[in-house]
Length: 322
Image (cartoon, rainbow, N blue to C red; front, side, top):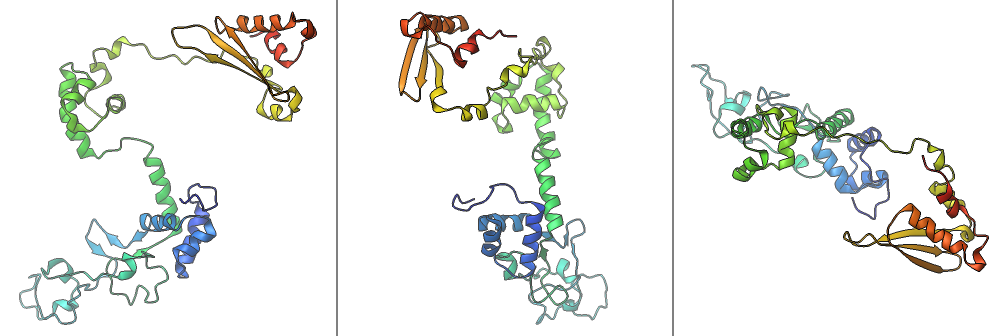
């Protein structure tokens, strides 16, 4: 989507698809529809082409309207092309079986379906008087249902066909039974096109004959434990939210941070930034622990002008932890 188009930058809703169908029936362009929905015209174009409804039945190879759709039907003189009836004197141009049996059959194409709007919505001819075989229509309910099915299927199960899984299983499972690891299998067979992590996920899902128990080292590892947070009393977060921070006056805001050194060193730098005074302080600590930070506050309190040093930052380290 174009960054210059205002909007929520989210997916199309059922109400948006209903508006698209109504405007397509009225003959509106993609630009007019996109301007109202605050979307890019290409978004509307992709939505219509991806979720349009066809009247073709792939299982039977038939169309909803059984007519002759050949472009040569007006001047064709052929008879009995199918050979079903020996003495058939009917011209093939008046028979719908010409679409499946004639070698010179050329399907008629509609320019309305090859360019915007890509659907028959808003066409003046109508379905009854149209000779185009393959018609497309945009229906908001069908489009929304197809969108939700695609949204769910793209995040679940295995993104492969059964034939692809069988071909991969013929290579993977025998090698797993021999004791080879998934990494070794993928190194020797890069044509599988899988990553090591994907291979382990497929084995866990049970899509292969080889299972997790067939992995030699898999049974030696314990399942990972999910450690819960050590903080059980959430009342300590009262008054410490970001919304509470925004309500503080600038004179009470002090930013504190620790800058750690390399992995080989345990030293770090404790920094303070006073916004109202534009003052920046930094203290070198031998280790990044709570006690080392408290020692910095104790040292600040021993200064002559900071005898009465108090504040929410000091209370944070004096508060007992649970």
